[in-house]
Structure formats: C-alpha cells, structure tokens
Amino acid sequence: MQAQLRKLPSVDKLLKVDEITAFTKIHSHQVVVDAIRSELDSARQQIIAGQPALSAADLIRAVTVRIVANTRPTLQPVINATGVIIHTNLGRALLSDRAQKAMIRAASAYSNLEYNLEVGARGSRYIHAADLLCRLSGAEAAVVVNNNAGAVVLALTALAKGSEVLLSRSQLVEIGGGFRIPDIMAQSGATLVEVGTTNRTYTRDFEQAFDPDQTGMILSVHHSNYQITGFTAQPTLAELAELAHRYNIPFMEDLGSGTLVDTAPFDLAHEPTMQESVAAGVDLITASGDKLLGGPQAGLIFGKKHLVDKLKKHPLIRALRVDKTTLAALQATLLAYLENKAIDEIPVWRMISARPNALARRARKWLASLRSVPQLADLPLQVVDSVSAVGGGSLPGQTLPTKALVISVDSVDALAEKLRYLDDTPVVARIEDNRLLLDPRTVLPEQDKTLVAALKKVLAETG
Ligand SMILES: *Cc1c(COP(=O)(O)O)cnc(C)c1O
Image 1 (tube, protein in one colour):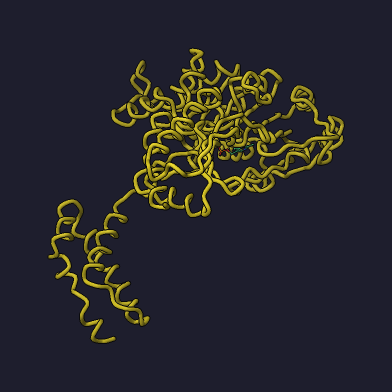
Image 2 (image 1 turned 45 degrees about the horizontal axis):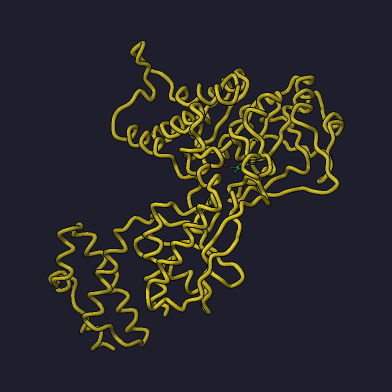
C-alpha cells in the first residue's frame, strides 16, 4: 500500500502533463490545481481502502473530467418531452421572444428603472408593469414582487397581522415546495379561522365566524392542484366580497395561476381569470407571473388602491423586490395580451393551442428519422394517442389530447436515465406502462433535430 501511495504523481508533475496543461490556458491555475488535488485525494482513499490503484492514464482522465464538470454551470437547458407544459421542476413558463429581448435590453444597458425622466429625479420601479396589469385586469392599482408566495406573505403581513383571517376549510392548501396556507398564515402573524367543512362551506358560515373585534380579513385560495367534487358548496367571490364590505374588512384572493385568457375555448375547464376576480369585487388579488400568464417568475398583486398603497409602504416589500430583467419580461408579456397576440406569441399558449394533427406530424417525423438508422429499424416504436397536461397548479385533472412517440424497451428506466445524462442537452421523458413516452407538445419545434439526434445516440448505445 505504501509503495502504491508513493507512486502517485505530485501536483506539479500532473500540471506538466500536456492534457492538463491545456486546461491552464482556458481556466485559472486554481481551478486546475483544485481538480488535481481532489482526484489525487480520491486516488489515495481508494488505495487505502484496498482497491487497485488507478493507472496514470486513468488518473489524468479523471482530472480532465473533473475540470470540465467543475467549470460547467449547474443550471442547463433540457428538452421537456414530458408533455407537462408548466413544469415547475423544469422552470415553468418559457418566455416569448419579445420578453426574452426585453430582458436582454434591460440587462445590457442602464434604464429608467427607478428614475423619473420627466422630472429628472428618483422614480419607482413598481410603476413599470403596474399600469398594464391594471388595464388588463380592470384593477385600480397593482404592484409586482418576486413571486406569488411572497405576494401572499406580504399581503397577509401588511393587512392582517394580529387579526383573524377567515378561510374555508376546503382551501387549506399545500401548493408544493413547502407552501402551506396555515404555515404562511402563522408566518404572517395572522390567525387562521377555519370556516365551514371540507366539502361544503356557505356564506352563513363566514357570518357566524365573523368577530367585529378580531376578524381582519376574508381570504379565498384557489384550488390549484386538487379538485373537490360530489356533494360540494362554496360561496361565490361576489357573495364573499359583499360580506367583507358589509363588515368593512378586505377580501383577498390567492388566485394561484390566474389567467387573462379564457381556457374554455381550448377544450379545457374554465380557469378563473384575473378580470373575473376584479369584477366580482375582490379587494386584493395575488397570482404568479410564470404559470398560465406565461411570463417570468413574479408575484402579481392587484386590486384596490388603498390596499396596494399599504403594501408598497410595508418594509417587507423591499425583501421581495423584483429584478429589472423580470419587470422588463413581464411588461413585454403583458403587452402581448394588450395587443391580442398572447396566443401566438407566448409559448405556454402556443403549446396549449397546438393542434393534435400538427403534433402527430412531428411525432411521426421523429419516428421516421429513427427508423432510417439501420441499427434501429427493428426497434418497437409507435406513435400513439396520449394526453398532455397544463400543470403549474392550474386546471387540475384537465388534459389535452396529444400524439406521442412511444419506445418500448426492456430497461425503460435505464433508457430514461441515459437521456437525462446526456451532456449537451438532457432529455426528460415520461414513463408510462413501462414504456418511454415523448410528447411533442412541450418540445420546441427548433429542438426536434437535437432530440432525434439524442435518441439515435442513446438507442444505438442501448442496442
Ligand atoms: C403556485 C401557487 C402559489 C405559489 O406561487 P409562486 O409564484 O410559485 O410563489 C401560491 N398559491 C397558489 C394557490 C398557487 O397555485
């Protein structure tokens, strides 16, 4: 063992090996030395553990692999072939070209982010997307923060801290990623008062729970990722708004995804729109920027001016401050709605409105291209009817008909893993009934070539 340990080369010696020296021209000396040290370390551990020592060539290769791995950004593009359009794990909504360009513009030059050009003095970053949001939703005032969870915390803290908040028992939601309404409520210093039952809640339940000395707000939270069906009842937004106004307390709604476009014409259930909530008299509404709106991650807050003004003055808003590139992308996204171009421009809506015929054509093209490889000619490939999902805490249980390419192999998990391990652009597919399924709906048409090349490579290796 001692002899083997002594045989390990020194850091300096490895630095002089051509393959490794080449890296010192691209990366800093420190990066290369760190990689050499870590690999020497693991080589030493291996010897001490009684395993055979690495050959010199293997050690050099391990160092170069380590340098490449250490200098690659961990955040990288992937191809989403799952058919889930708003996939939170894969980055939710993709941005329109217009929004991407706006982000680059905001990132690459100074801007009037917080500068009033008319008076030549300090302005507010909160005006930039707010006017558009008001025009589109019909609200009096709006403000944008980092994300919807932040928006809810801010609103509850600023408006209901130290008081009771009435919420239907059917809306004690966990959205995922640790966002649970009862916890958020506790965090905000408000006291949750559960009203009604899991399946049925009436306006009179809210009336009975109202305490003039304690109650500070009525809250409604959208059923983002679950459904309550069967014997159910829920007061309408308008009824709760009327009640809150009678008691002189605000009625707030966490709309979750929210949308400015009616989903029904796309053969989906009706997702509540932002305009409907404003029209029903809800005083303050919060929603995400990167769900059905199809914009950047953001928390949209809109409603009555006196409430929005309170939020803008609250110290917490500074901690939830939205970035200039986000504001630029949000503004560009909202402009597409204003110009009635959202369905054509915004990827989320393009994917939702993609026609099954067009999707089938692409899936068949993928199949034909794979079949053209002699080695893959006998592979069990099929284009089948399947379903895509909107995802992102909207339209629970709703699906869109699609055509997917299905690959049947013995080791479907191993195939899926190989696709995820691809260096250039990993592919995330869906496994269903022990088959690998690739849904064209969420694959960008410009990614078709890359996807097919990836499949050819991985399938040829799998044999
Ligand atoms: C998604 C969602 C949230 C969280 O929104 P983020 O923008 O991810 O912070 C909060 N509430 C509801 C009802 C949601 O659907």
